[in-house]
Structures are given as structure tokens and as C-alpha cells.
Image (cartoon, rainbow, N blue to C red; front, side, top):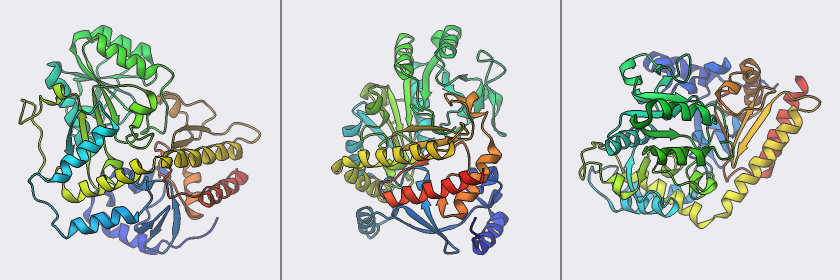
Length: 431
């Protein structure tokens, strides 16, 4: 293992901890799960990021997904620089808002109308409020291990059994909020049926990550998403696809196109803002008409549709739409990386399990197949921490958590994949 200098990162982290809780503005960045302190990033270019101490990394976090084109893409930067000269924010409509909404609709026709917001949390929170307002029902069905942002009603965990009440999984969230959320097991049809049997006419919507990516990447079993579409229709509930991660990543039309499913509402984020704080939710006009100022479901945001964020989003989608071969490129590189890790780490006996859907990849330090949250719990977290540290010390930047995805960007090249596999082979040789 190489020895890297992190003196500036350590200094900046110490200062940050004086003024920011835990020294970070999103918990996973603290790297506590891997028993390390974070590195502070100075810049990024293409497939690489550079920390304040001058260390270079091949980046597989990609800002947790938005950097599908790589860092500092010249076309996106050019458009943003021009927009900056015209002003940062107006709190009034701009043409770019409907241009971006139209592009989202082109890619995902189910999103007949779109409301722009500032984060994935806002998008899912608003979509759920809309679902309740449209159906006049209170309960939301979500899945254990799927994350839909940090709004109060979604920070819940299941009780002792699937038919028990959900309870809050965060301080500051009253259990009264959690009681309107019921929790099923991802990829388990029977757990969903049981909840609909118990609560039948009270469930407003089912919200799901079509590919679970917040407990590591877990694909839906064959027919599972189709089952969710069928059972929601049967029970007059809405189906919400949380495509904050999968939107514009699995395909131009996201998971809807990839799996051929038409939900009632979709939330998108990350890529749709080109790395800027922007997200959106949308669906059929009949449903979206319930939102203020047309309807009685209230949602607002001073910076929603910010002209700089919409500029970055439009530019990013333009590159993706005009170059559809990007999807084949990132999927192939993800396949090569996943197959290479599988061969290296499981030579002789199975030590890890690899899941991949398109350009989303996870390495789970367990010999089990990983199909649900319970399987994830079998992972060796200390082994992942060792893996993370070894890769970081050798110039490979992966998520500081076993339970996050690895992202491939269009800027990753074959030499990046080969260099990464060489480092992983060295780590595997130590085990």
C-alpha cells in the first residue's frame, strides 16, 4: 500500500468539525463507516478527481451519480459560464424551465407535466404529498432498504414483522409521522400483498427505487415491477418510481424505458441537474393538475428552476440525447469492471457478490447472492473498509460505505478500468 499525504485534508476536516456537525453536510461523506477521515476535493476533470493535498484518484463516486459525462465537461461548462453572466436567480419564470421540462417529457412520456425542485428529497416528498392529495388516502408503502430522501414520513423502518406499524428511524421524527408509512420487503411480492390485504383502500401509493441503489445495487427480480404496477392499479393506488439515481442513467428514458413499465409518477434528480442542485417530479396531467396553483396540493420553492441549474441540466441532457452511444459505452465499461472484480475476488472460492444494472455496480463482501435488505446485512463491513482504504491509498476513489453504488461515467476509459482492476488484484492477493 502506498503512503499518501493527507495533511491539508486533516486540517480542513478539523476546522470543519468546529462549525459543521460532524464536519460534513451529508453524513456518508464523513467516512466513519470505513474508519477513515474524508479527503477534501479541490477539482475534477474527466474521470479523475484531485484532493487538496495533490492526490489524484480515478473517481467512481461521480458526485453520487450526476457526473455521467465526467467532471468539468467542456460543453456544460461553456453553457453555464454564459448563463452566469446573466444573473444567478430571479424568482420568476424563465424560458429554460419549460425547455428542461419538455426534454424530460421527451425522454419519459409518462411525465406529461413536470414540476422542478431543488433536490431528490424535495421531489419524492412532493410526489408523495401529491399522491395523497390525488387519491384522498393517507398510507404510503415503501420498501426496507430503499431510500427516498430525508423527509419525515420516509425515515422509517419496519417493526418486528411486515404487518406491524412502522416506527421512526431518526431522532426528531415523531412516530405519528411514521404511522402513515407501511414497509414491505424489496423483491418480495407476498409482503406487498399482505399489506394491501390489510390496508386495501387506505394505501395512496407505492414508492420504489426500480433498481435499489441505496443499500447497494439490487436489481428487481423478474416480474417484480410488473407486479407492483398490477397491484397498484387493482387497488386504485399510484405507483411512484424514484428515479433520482436511475433517471437518464440506465437509458435515455431511465428505468421506465429499461424495464418497460409506466408508473403514475416519477421523480428524477442528479443527472437532470448536470451536477447542480436540481430535481423534478412529474406524471399524468390529470394528477399534476392537483398541484397549486391549479389544485389544492401545495408545493413551492424560491430557487426552484434556478437558471444556472436548468442551464447545466439542459446541456447535460443535450449531450446524452445527441450521443445515444454513450449508454452502450458506460454499460460496457461497467460490465468489464464488474466481470473483472468477480474473476479477481472469487478465484478459488466465492468471497464477494457483484450486482450490476447498466452502469450501476456494487461489490458486496458476502458469499450470498444479494437480492434484498436481509442479504445486505450479511456483508463483512470491516472487509469493505479494508478494501476502501487500499483502493484510496492507490488512487481509486469509491464510496466510503458498503451500501452505496459505484458509478461509471462516459469519461472513464479502458486504461481507467485496467488500472482499477490491477489495484483490486493487488488487494485480492493480500487477502
